[in-house]
Image (spheres, rainbow, N blue to C red):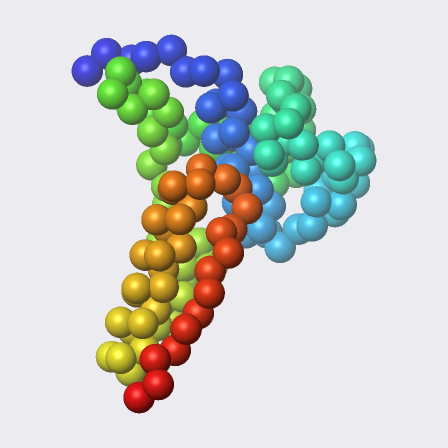
Amino acid sequence: MTDAILVGFDVDYYIGKRLKRRRKQLDLTQKALAIKIGVQHQQIQKYECAGHRMTVRRLLELSRALEVKIGYFLEGLVSDEEYPAKVVDDIMHQRETRMLVEAYSKMNPRSKRFLLEFMQEITSKEVASNDEHPPEIHLLRKAG
């Protein structure tokens, strides 16, 4: 397996996602993090969505503010010819995942099936539209 060269945007996007994840793990707002490193909160927003690239110095400041080693921002980034920017995501450690699993475990089988079909519909429309904005979904409950 040969490493491919990562496109700059892919790396910036990945680092931005790691930044956002860690900020949320610490229950920090963008404004609170911005204050810690001496920038405006809009700058944090731009870093998180890969709108602006970070210097190594800024990455070091963020790692200190977020109490992680600087390597945290690159952990899980894998590159090869077949998957140019494959991200090994730690989805089971995300708060939203735990909340979803907890709620799902309390549902009856019929509701679980409905939810699964609904989520598959959302996913297929998001993939088809290739858009960041959620697709419009119409929920129709069958009378029964």
